[in-house]
Image 1 (cartoon, rainbow, N blue to C red):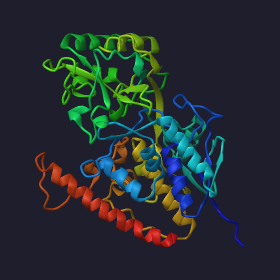
Image 2 (image 1 turned 90 degrees about the horizontal axis):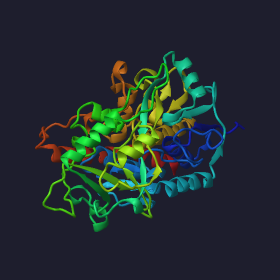
Image 3 (image 1 turned 45 degrees about the horizontal axis):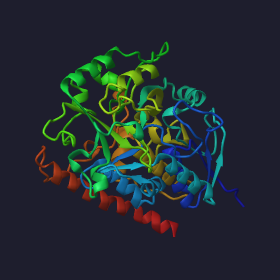
Length: 453
């Protein structure tokens, strides 16, 4: 009798957790190799699987008008663990899907460790395995030894950018005589959703002083040989300020869709928003305020924000190295390393950006690996779906020479005939994209469901 083969997954973040769940539910024995808590990282605080290290938001949950929301829908349709646990620990966030991060990770860990087909080994893998079936889902904080092994195998230097973390404040220390609760454009189905964000208004003079302080503040210096190739979706606020004094006011500090409850007739020049970070509502993170300022400078500069003059911080912002591979030149359409097809890659290390995109690529890698182990063949993921558009982009659709991390977006989808272009036709066009994607995704899932019966 042939010995049962296991699927080994390196990394227990979003991608690794989802990959393990999908493969295990297909009947495959899975071993998750997670180096935490024995080996820590700059950003992680626990040894939990699925720990959120940056924002607590999965972004838009609108599955008819937003590509991220469509990805949520597709993952739910595929029985995704990450989406299931996110829904169970959901927090009010307007039209976004935000979660209570600690209970979320605890639930992901509990579900995986309770699964009869999953075991967890708390060890650090430092070399590329020569045999067996493996998925590398080590995320943006791949250990130095493993990153060096990947670089040696691929013959290229590890690509990297620097990812910045936003600070979190205690709600009770915010001055609510200045700040008010409101979601932008009062978005949401309930009063709780419509008042999900905490808003701090600024006058023009306050904004100008804030920008001056940002530009003058002490920042973290890079080590020799390191470069700051930031991903545009996660720029430190001081880097945005360096690009132009109005950049922040048209970015995370834009005042549109908001009315100051304390002074309705006076429109703020800029607004700093904070989003609830836990179910109790005791913690709020400053939206879009990733930073590389030193801790002392952060306290001084953030105290200039009206309403946060005496705010206390549960966590200050920070910066860390974020490693990813040049997937278009290295991976085949099954997400396997061409030079070592026994190894798949999944998650942020493949060059997708964001929790949702990382988990989605884990979902696909887990299903692909399970099918291969069982001698089944999966049809290609339709490029008309959010999943297919994303995996197609990283495994060949993107230009390898200029490859950079990418969020899912409708620009990755094949165009539709007979649909009006431009801004005026956008609503109907996006609905057509999502309708087509849902039908094609369900058609792709059906044969796999039948095979599992």
